Amino acid sequence: MTTSSKSIEQWVRPNIRRLQPYSSARNEFSGEASVWLDANESPFNTPYNRYPDPLQWAVKQRLARQRGVTPQQIFLGVGSDEAIDLLYRIFCTPGRHNALSIAPTYGMYRVCADINDVAYREVPLNADFSLPVEALLAAADADSRLLFVCSPNNPTGNAFPEEEIERLLTGFEGIVVVDEAYIDFSSRPSWLGRLAEFPNLVVLQTLSKAWGSAGVRLGMAFAAPAIIDYFNRVKYPYNISAPVQRYALDMLDRADEVSRWVADTLAVRDRFVGRLAELPLVQRVYPSDANFVLVRVDEATAVYRWLLDEGIVVRNRSSVRLCDDCLRITIGTADEMNLLFQALSRYPKRMSL
Ligand code: PMP
Image (cartoon, rainbow, N blue to C red; front, side):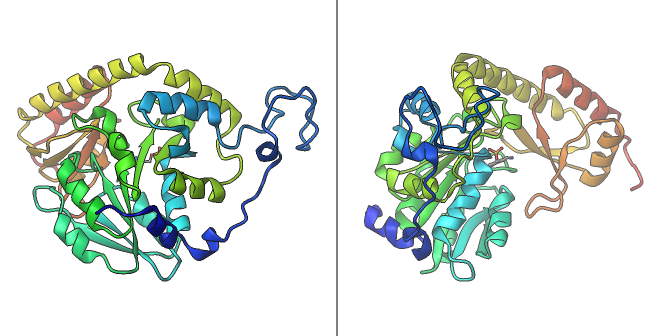
């Protein structure tokens, strides 16, 4: 049985269900005109003088064609981080409702829970980083509203099997958020293809990773129109600036180039992973479906500091649950990975901390 759209309404915070959203000048009139005197804008400094389209229809139409969804199934945010925060604000009453996630995973799910005063329940991954499906379902109660599954997961790098995520979608009485920030690097299919089947599914994607545009800040949430409607009511009226909307339209036309970047990154990753086995300090390289690898080494913090001295920054994840002595290494260019490899090869056998 899948969740009905009626129960989606029931999970929305009562104040948000009742919300009379702000109606901007550009909401009320969005057609073509020759004289614009409705938004107290300056007539000077074209085109930056005008407010952008609050619902970014041109970008959504382009994106919808590319991803095989409808524009009404898309929310655009200032990074996918904005979508994460809005999910709490739409579905969780502070001090009452709770959210579930796996651990370790992306840190913003917890930070946004804390900001919104929402209890956050972490369920550890199994020791092989597989999904603890039944433990996640068992951790839910009548006040659970959100369940975050990052796939491929950050920082472990693995993607989870479709059947397991499906079990969460059908078994969890709330919103299941599948964060696909790294999906372009994965051999597993995106959940976008099955969006229409699950009224409680929200898929997050971003231009920050494979699309090479982290500096631009554009993230996406895909969901049933009933959920996207709430995103649109709660977001800031003009959250995506006009230059970013123009940039996104250009970038979405460069899908072939992006595919080549992804293929390059995966080839560099696989070569780098192959060479890591030569290094005595490397204990284990975890399989990756992403543009990073999690590597267990002898004395991760010492190795991390050694690399910093060499001018190379990786992410020290050794204080994270299940990740002791692990470094998370982003895949850069072949030259950058060579520099890293050479620095690791020079790492002294024993270094005092
Ligand atoms: N989800 C995951 C799993 C991430 O790793 C990140 C960024 N590191 C984000 C979301 C946030 O991405 P954005 O730049 O779109 O806010």
